[in-house]
Length: 53
Image (cartoon, rainbow, N blue to C red; front, side):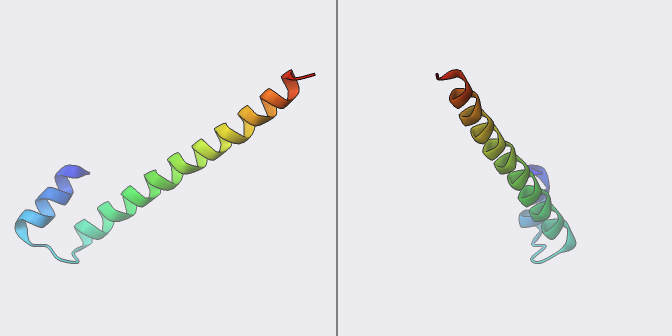
């Protein structure tokens, strides 16, 4: 992904499909990791609540 961004900026592909696709991929990965983090925090909170008397 970084290679595509460097390639796009080096050749001056302003607004090209390549940069738009790499931006979409970056946003999708960011969303995925954010959702995983939220799920981990929620379930760890439930785990701590279940372990406390």
